[in-house]
Image: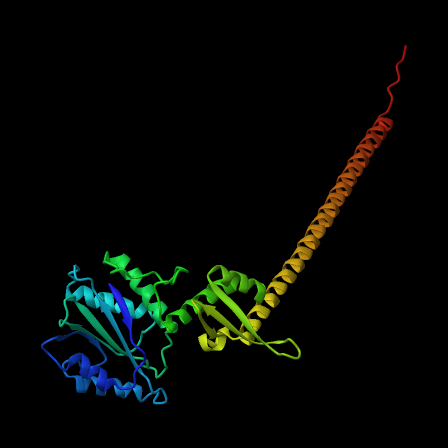
Length: 315
């Protein structure tokens, strides 16, 4: 099984018509929040929720799951796989329909969904291609499906992928994976270079200051800001600075905690010594009291002996 994602589209009517107009090749397996027997009604239902966020002009999500020709998956399992796929790519709490097409030599299902959820929020799925491939990879393993020669995009070798958008996603994924362990831009450069990604800067000719950043992969270069806002030079600097501040704060916390532990140990040692001295004083006091009691008892016995009258013996 492989997954194919289409760019966000504007018209639910056009997409629904493509999926459902020819009833000889299309079958709606499952629908959530829309009517599945008529493409016009389906499009109308999608548009009603779209009106919660009309400013989003491309609300249509469209993806295809292609099964290998040697696979025979029943409709129930197709629906289950499609629903898990939607959850995995974070396309949740929204309207969708799962439509099976029978017009090719291999079975495939189309998934159309609303990028506006039931609360009127726009659903963010970036980076969608990588998330889709990750979801497909996990589902293939879970259901024992045939991967149909699909490539694992989590690996750093993207040689089989030849379109610009995928290269951008590859750079984005690599930056996100490398960034947490980096202490500065230089370390990030070194780690990306090991993955075949070259880092370049746009410099101020007079001051030599870095003004922008770009990344080159498989003979194609992209500005950091064109890959993602988080990959711009300013954003990367802020992230690394925050990490440095956090590291410094963690170190300060450890230093303060070590001082607290040392102070606690000194206080415990002082308290133990004071307790030992108190016990020693109490023992000495008890010993003195015991000695006084013994002396008093001896004196009492002597006084008793003196008071006993002596007997006179007559011859």
